[in-house]
Length: 208
Image 1 (cartoon, rainbow, N blue to C red):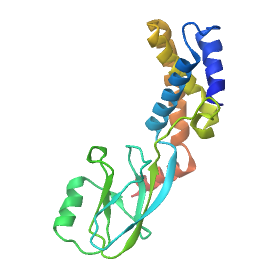
Image 2 (cartoon, rainbow, N blue to C red; image 1 turned 180 degrees about the vertical axis):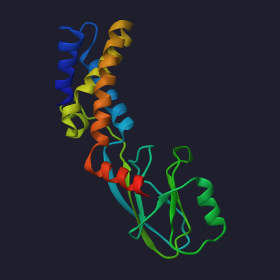
Image 3 (spheres, rainbow, N blue to C red; image 1 turned 90 degrees about the vertical axis):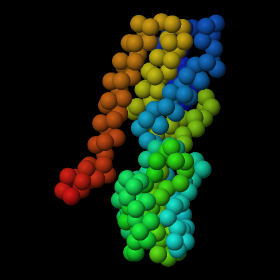
Image 4 (cartoon, rainbow, N blue to C red; image 1 turned 120 degrees about the horizontal axis):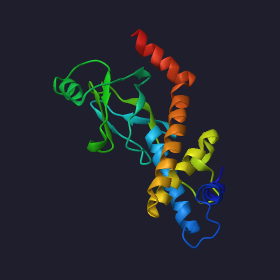
């Protein structure tokens, strides 16, 4: 579904507004774009893989410029997996000059774009990681979420409807579409968490 198609559904099927006298095309496109961005951020997609070079004695690295402010996954140092740990453990291991390969990593959005790891890098190496990209919605000809998860594009329309009815102070209608959005969002969440990869991770955690 493109944003233009989503706008047509929003105007004709949800708002039942044939004219552009109250909701302009630009207004509705804006509601849809904001909704798509918010949902992508909430659910943590799209993701990308990246690798950065670190030097001996380094204990931080920078995220890519397009990284969103949400958590990292699957960080590794030269192929050795790192474990997410509290900041105090990272600082303690760095200050104690612990030897050996890095074992832990930490990233907190309020601290900016740097990821800390410990112990310090004993040699020049490559840190690889998965991160969530900052999603930028396209124009009316672009696919919602760049074509990802087409079965759930409707939730973007529902969220945009909430914004539109809030703008027109129609509280009851806004609440109705909020409920519709929440129901589909729950289904979407279950879908994302029931993928084979996430099942495997959950099983590994349960057995550890």
